[in-house]
Amino acid sequence: MRLDKFLAHMGYGTRKEVKILVKSKAIQVNEVAVKDSSMHVNEITDKVTVYGEPVKYKEFIYLMMNKPPGVISATEDSRDQTVIDLLDDDVRHFDPYPVGRLDKDTVGLLLLTNDGALTHRLLSPNKDVPKVYYAKVEGVVDESDTIAFSHGVILDDGYHTKPGILKILNSGPVSEIELSVTEGKFHQVKRMFEAVGKKVVYLKRLSMGKLVLDKNLSEGTYRELTEEELEQIQQKNDLA
Image (tube, rainbow, N blue to C red; front, side, top):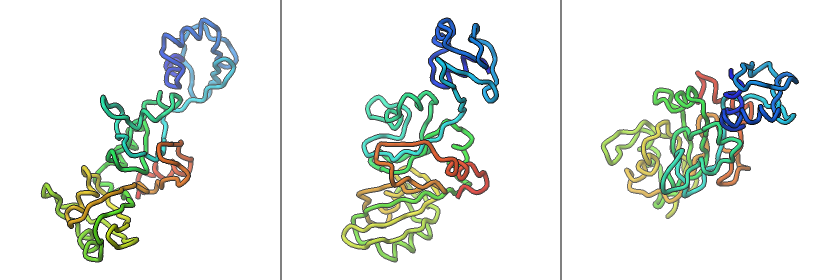
């Protein structure tokens, strides 16, 4: 890989800016000052430093975010704040994007990455990756709803959803539930409850496959996945 591409990917500026670093003798490869930013380096075995600080190459980034309300799951928007706007520059230069979407007013687990192959596997309809949500619902949620969801319900556009697993935590004027679904249709959880005559007033995603929201992450914050979490979601045949 060209050195300027290597450093640009790691957030050290454009290729033009890397050339300036080279001219200032700020960059060394294997303890030798670099004279040409177009030189090739082995991103794994070569030791690259900038102002004496080692640069460890990383191709992909994997971030767990606790998405706050009022922020949209997109890379850019002309009107609303996006989840990318919440990221610091040291990770934004990897060009991560949200894996799937959470509604603007929905909170909870959101995975951001620049790994296209992983994104495809997680979102592929035939993988049936379960997503678990916690919700507060206006109306008494009871066993009849559990049965209806277990067979799938008819949405307002006539679509018959795949079966969902509904767990009632508290049944009352405002019920509390957990729902596991394997699809990601537009406003799906809200529309499923509308199909049985009820309204979701609060929605939070708790997990996606084996990836579970870190309870220590406050809304609007994020962290990189641990090695264990990354291994779990990278298992091609065992995402669920």
